[in-house]
Image: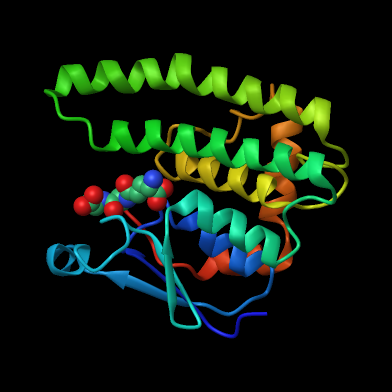
Length: 209
Ligand SMILES: N[C@@H](CCC(=O)N[C@@H](CS)C(=O)NCC(=O)O)C(=O)O
């Protein structure tokens, strides 16, 4: 088992928060390095793909958030209990990542105020309900007892939690938003109330993205 983990990202949640939450859920220590955007251009050329997040494991480096997510899940026994569960869990990582890409796109939207308001409205009224329905149907088919795949917590639960947590943080979801999605609501709660995660959520840095 690797001894030391260093996670490098910007000072935000974005594509790194799923990874941070996974370390926390698994009770594994990691160094949470947050790069200043001013220092990014010089660091960029030293990274594997010119992007963050990246993970250093005992001095070796890997980047691409979904690959890192799978690596952590397999390392910490959060990847599913057989090959079929593993591919289902992977599919949720990808679906949550596709959804996060849309959220980040809205955050970086380049347009005038009216165009931005229209994009946010469509995202809230069309994209979000459609993704929540897909997650909920998936959970009703593959999950149990408040978990997304099988009977135990996997990184699939954490991936769904992380992306929805981002939407709560930005006021796109509110306390009633999950009422029509009982599977999603239960999986969200399973992660949020896991004692280590609950403690982390209380003390993590505030974030703009
Ligand atoms: N597919 C990559 C995308 C990574 C990515 O686009 N990261 C952004 C931050 S969320 C980044 O590094 N932006 C800085 C840049 O492209 O120069 C992953 O999932 O890790």
